[in-house]
Length: 190
Length: 190
DNA sequence: GTATCTTGATCAATATAATAAACACTGCTA
DNA sequence: TAGCAGTGTTTATTATATTGATCAAGATAC
Image (cartoon, rainbow over all chains, first blue to last red; front, side, top):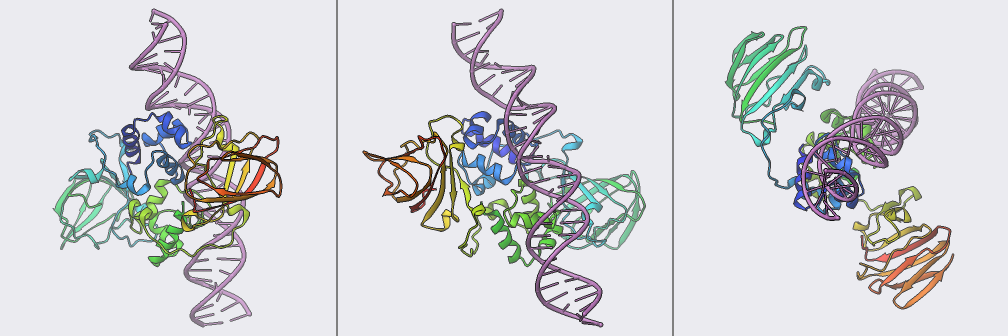
């Protein structure tokens, strides 16, 4: 959610300083600074006050095209958490069973790289996963059972996989410890 | 900002309960309840999580048409504070000098009714006020000086006014006490 | 050269959004 | 009738957005 980048571009395109925009919109310059740096999640109300001062509607703002300097390096804390599309069967607390942390912004790249953490008991199921893509990964720690088509294999640290995503596949962490996997996928599916 | 109404309609249109949507989006049902009732200003991040679960983009959400059962009755606490368009000269703290509380949602009506409170020293100035409309009001408490065209008059409790908004006009509270006015305007100017 | 102003970033204090657990209400089943 | 499962709401607590002030860096002027 690059609202910070959008706002920064929009503000500069209008030739405004953070303080100028702040006074026009009734928020503080500190808040605008933090939003632009992604250090805070603004409330809808705050963002609306800022956009009103430009002026620009939400619709225009979120559909706005803006120049973007591709980001190359990421600290571990910058890997953004994304939600899995797949259906989980374990229980309703599925979200906590799988953490997907993505390198960069998928919508800007054709290659998607993920840092995945499967909690004990995590199960991706096989549904809804017939997109055209190739998927590969290397297990960093823990163990995980991977089924691709007819084949099933237990994978441990250092092991790896690669397959065509159109083949039904399923990840299950049958062990007691979390399993960490670094995977890549092209094109992105999220 | 009727994001609550939009969300409520959207959720029901998808046949979801607050709890179902909550679990799909990763927020609590309480939050969704509060948003729908307008009891909280959701963060952009929270709203995005909810919309992602529908799924719907910000752009679609804010430009979405939705049925609206016109609200007829309002408790005093439901009169929404709006910001004056006019320019204030007193100082930079102008916002605190005039409180405008509106009956209903102007964008849905052709008649706008306001509960106005002018702080001591409040001055609307005469600028930027040449819209086509008729404006009328009755003074509830305090006193206020109203200038319309060439004419100027002090008005006290029970006094009233009506004029064509295209004529330059100005409200000034010259007294020591706040002045409360109930006014009506058609068509709405905000 | 040093003031002075403006820029964006940062910090502690405060306001408020978000959570988790209760609540009351409805409809359904035994 | 009681009990259970669903609904939306409310409350106390926690998390965090927002403020107001301060900060260092650049620009301009004198």
